Length: 292
Image 1 (cartoon, rainbow, N blue to C red):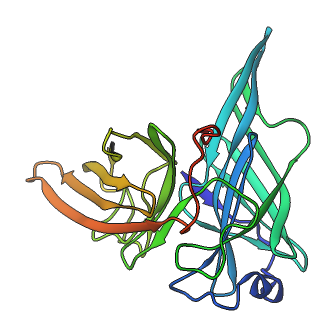
Image 2: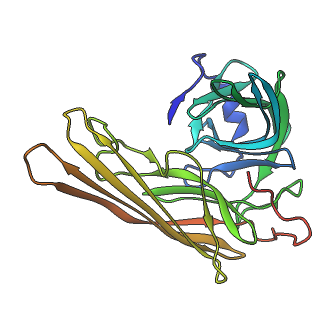
């Protein structure tokens, strides 16, 4: 999934005001918004703002001939993406299965802004409409912070370790919107070098929760390197969630088979992760999170 940030210089003075006084590189400030129509999350870290999550509803239809398919859903930004902008607002784009864009501006202790999403293939379309949709995200303190979520958003699990950064939401039967980054020990895909960070999955992932609140997600990615060798990467994320945190490990095994040579294997992990839940945030049974 390719990512492209807006090409306007970042306004450092604006982003610096987004970072809470107690925030540090190890403890970014989160901004979270969650309604029946959208879910958004951001982090302010080291005088920069990143969009972590953008998900929501769409309207889907065929154009030739026209057929209304009803409501659809999208989930964008597989990994935290730096937002860039001018003197008042910042924005970011993602081009993958669909085109997602979002802009935000600091208003008091909240971020407000607009987003759009469009997915199209031949006569099939899913989009958020002809005009941008608005959102609001409030400052959100992780467990052990000085304050609880300000506006009652449903809780999120987020944590950044030295080797893995993970964000997810959890309902009664599913962990969803799993996204983040890891530090590779190997090349990824058909890349020419080992990157400093890479997305956990090519797009936000979901996983079924067991009765014991554990989950596992396994993906396989395959292709051809620039030299023509075939590669296969098996990705496995195991974890569990409770009322305090989501914990687990991330494993990525890469096998490369050059022509007329023996296969080579490279392993990243298992890398531990821990995503904290605000101390007094609880899922309400009568109002479960909507899965986008």
